[in-house]
Length: 202
Ligand SMILES: N[C@@H](CCC(=O)N[C@@H](CS)C(=O)NCC(=O)O)C(=O)O
Image 1 (cartoon, rainbow, N blue to C red):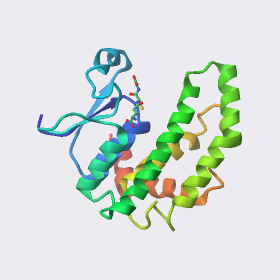
Image 2 (cartoon, protein in one colour; image 1 turned 45 degrees about the vertical axis):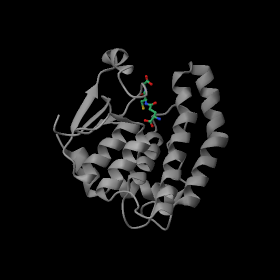
Image 3 (cartoon, helix red, strand yellow; image 1 turned 135 degrees about the vertical axis):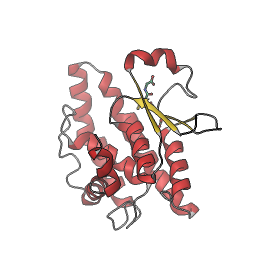
Image 4 (cartoon, rainbow, N blue to C red; image 1 turned 60 degrees about the vertical axis):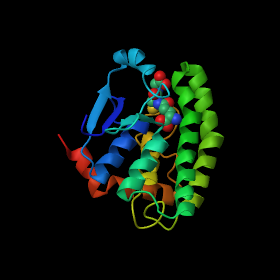
């Protein structure tokens, strides 16, 4: 292996996609390994924590957990703050996105009636509270820390994009519309040259 290898499911979503975006924005030439669902059960126990994404770097043990992967990429390529307090502030926001996923993801496995009730409850409480907290932690913009893109912004982008598409049943596509800084980070990442070039590739 002479290139970094990013292993994730074959979909442009969530924790794996944000790691792909980080590697691409960092200018790292990497193997984008896409696992088919049918192949996953046989692989699961071979992964450090039984989940994806996993980053393999030449000569290093396999690395897991999206935030650890993102922080490593960010530190190596100028996409994570050097100042340790500002870095911790970014990592706090990254954990905030993981809290969102941990709360919403169980609804993906629910039957229709239970899912509707659970998601309507999230719309009425958890999701606005989550967005309010995100909003008050974002600096002046356009990115989380100001003028420059960091790995935290990729994570925020993936979280907002999840709902913006309007494809999550019972959660309106406008759920974050009243949070201009949050939407501003999403839009600034979407329009970043590195992100555009990732999605423009054939
Ligand atoms: N804390 C982990 C969570 C990883 C995780 O739950 N990944 C999901 C996909 S986004 C997964 O591997 N699901 C399949 C499984 O757990 O078997 C991270 O941040 O990477």
